[in-house]
Length: 80
Figure 1 (cartoon, rainbow, N blue to C red):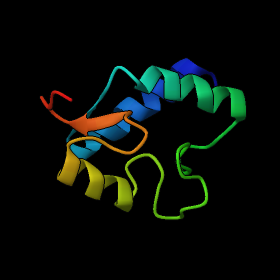
Figure 2 (cartoon, rainbow, N blue to C red):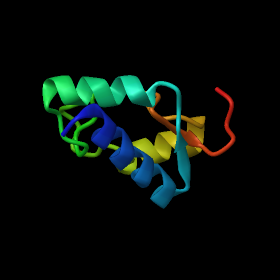
Figure 3 (cartoon, rainbow, N blue to C red):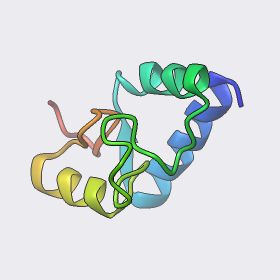
């Protein structure tokens, strides 16, 4: 997958969950492309099975802090 396809998938995930992408999302998508890291694994915490693009741990962070650990997803209209 190239970075544009990854970014599109991330955007679809955000929309499905009621979130939006941040300015950092493109960097995360390029990192995933370079490292061949799947969406199901968080680039900031790859050993945690509860993390991944909007996995349960990430959803908890977004609801609590307004943004996820890797800063790719945030609550809609949240200014961080």
